[in-house]
Length: 266
Image 1 (tube, rainbow, N blue to C red):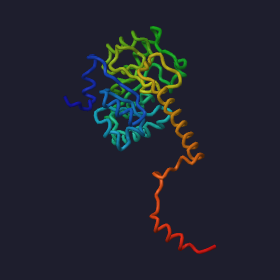
Image 2 (spheres, rainbow, N blue to C red; image 1 turned 180 degrees about the vertical axis):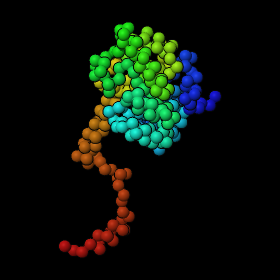
Image 3 (cartoon, rainbow, N blue to C red; image 1 turned 120 degrees about the vertical axis):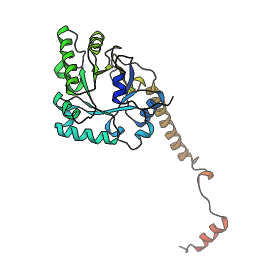
Image 4 (cartoon, rainbow, N blue to C red; image 1 turned 60 degrees about the vertical axis):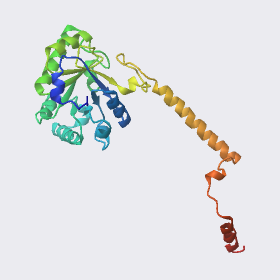
């Protein structure tokens, strides 16, 4: 069966019917791999999703791009930016800004994704980079926030690092889609960073991450091979092993003789 890119209506119709897969990808190569693997949704930097070749390599990926509230500027600034990336090929925009900004953009029929739970750009309000909504009171506040995003017009929210039970209960009680990053299997999509899956993240590895390959080790091996190749080149130049006859162009003997004869005497 030929795969087609899902619409917002398609995604909404999947609510409560299993989980989609979602990745944060950072290059055309990762996007192409996600396409070939059959990933459903990707979050992509704006400079990638607007690249002229993006839809060539990722024709069926539902592709979200975004700005944090610290980057967005005014509501009108964000709206102008959202229109620009949508025209360039994005399917939705991520907004960590206030509900007023979400509503301002959603009113123009632009698909908006919010963010609840641990929101890195707003983490100072929830105590830093740690789990959110571990008490009944905080869980109720999180439910209210999700409902507020839905009322503002967002079609989905990323829900990050909250107790699995809380995310599951919220998901059952709202119509908005919940995309889980470390919030368990009771949501509508499971979201991981490609750098964690591929093992290229050399920094902190989040609890919810799972490493499937060790690209860092391969990159280290390739870097060592680069250095070794460059050293061999240096040694060849020093020993006159490079260049060999096959690496240079030679003149016909008669032309060389004519050239030497034409050179004025010193």
